[in-house]
Length: 336
Image (cartoon, rainbow, N blue to C red; front, side, top):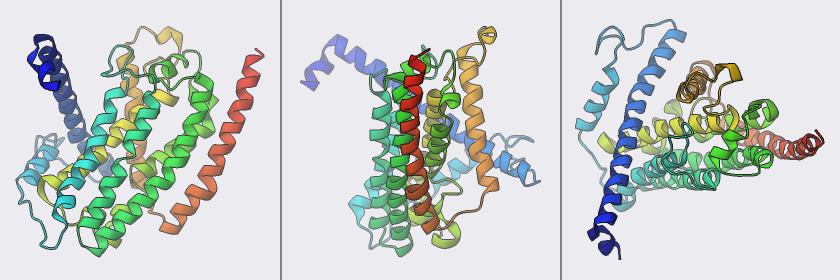
């Protein structure tokens, strides 16, 4: 059936269109990752009173990350003798593929979205959880105790914080009555959900930082404890896959935060509506990304026991309380 579809003119044309759009999206994501890494290094340099990259590509070091990526891709792809080869090879793919797939459903403006599905929020949460399998497989298949510890930490952390993450967005779903991301943005035309859902926003943002394995929740990759964590035995392009997945998820999570709580492409005030929605979206997106960089230069890494206690004993009860308060708020809003 697939062959018949591809051999027909209309089927082949649709396939080429979707394939071309996927390639364009991938190029945009690669461009973001390249300069997100550079921006992070420049921001960290500024906050630590140093220059950061300033040699390759002029005084701003605009080509430093490009040079780093080329060097990484040209490195030898080594594989330890005692690894579980099938799992070792497929783990980076399983870690990266979901991060790219979820972006297809994220709306950037009311006209710029690759796939508008009715349960876009549920789709994002379901697909992004598959990355945990790639991280665990990478730690297990490497036959290295540091990698195994990193993989176990990553799985425990991501599964634990995914629960308060899901709970925190239920308040948004209750207020909107939909899991369609476009409808969630449209429902914020009068007031952004960060004002109606401040508790949900805080829980979501903290849990999203933990899901991204970023400071102060970077225990799976703790370099002073586990050297490099679950991908310690990887090199070359396989190592690049894990780094790519981390920054693609940062792109996706910053986009989702903007859509759910910051009004997406909507202006803060009606009289600013003459400014294109893409500009507002970009400004909000950059602000969320900057805060993630800011966290890295500010907070120390917490202990593993503190990480788990914070997720289960603080974030989860707060997220449940937020659902209860949101239900009350919705009933109050019906009276006006």
